[in-house]
Amino acid sequence: MKLNTKYLGIEIRNPIIPAASLLTEDLSNLKKMEDFGAGAVILGSLFEEQVIEEEKALDFFLTQGSESFAEAISYFPSLSDYKSAPEEYLNLIRKAKESLSIPVIASLNGISKGGWIKYAKEMEKAGADAIELNIYFIPTRLNESSEEIERIYIDTVKSVAEQVHIPVAVKVSPYFSSFANMASKLQQSGAKGLVLFNRFYQPDFDIDELDVKPHLELSSSSSLRLALRWISILYDRIDIDFSATNGVHTSQDVVKAIMAGGSSVQVCAALYKNGIEYLRELEKGLNEFAEKKGYQSIDEMKGVLSQRKCPAPEAFERANYIKTLITYKR
Image (cartoon, rainbow, N blue to C red; front, top):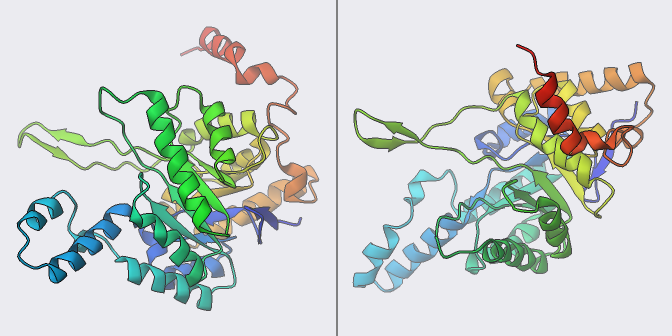
């Protein structure tokens, strides 16, 4: 079967892409990912805070003695907490493009229209084939309405998309009052792809030390269902590519995401658990399933279980909710 397809209008040799993570910040890992069959790679993120921190550091040396600096800089994590400063990140893009034959997608993580957005253009100049804008934002102000929150997302996406000529994908959370409407607005703002969904990492409490601790649990295949639901609902209704993430652990998960209508999947936790070489197993499983079912290409498989093509479209809506509840057995 032909596994090659397109994501964001870019040719990829298969739909399996390592997601932005610590693994994709290392050039040797990127080469290994290509060797084991990755369709493309998404570099670890450049954070808005990194750009702000570097600019403040530069300002400090230019205006040493300013009393406001020490207080202002304390709001941001130390630059040493991050793997790479902005210029080092751009160098990684250049080196990856020189070393790899597969597409290299840069990742920009932030939530405002500040000067950090200029790095989208710098990423393009460095050779990135596309940019994934990772919007990670938890609204906590009591006086912020849902309309204001949506406007922040839309303005940020529009600002980045206007900076570059390469495609921009947006990684978002599902927590909108009307996600379908928001997806449409993001597409209208210039997004060429939606990555569903961002994980919100919840802190834990240390009740002995009376402290809040970072806490990370890797996803499981069950985590994928929310993305499957929304991709299958929105597929062929808005002109945008979908990539499923957060829960892609097996070749069956890859198949499900494509059948829902996804153009690609992003793999992270599975690589931490099984190693980068596991990419080959995912590709092999996808190919074996397609041949068993008689599919000739990814495009032929894509969207066959979407709401528009499903024999029981009501399963995506309230009917499935009721049926699930009344048929559950211990």
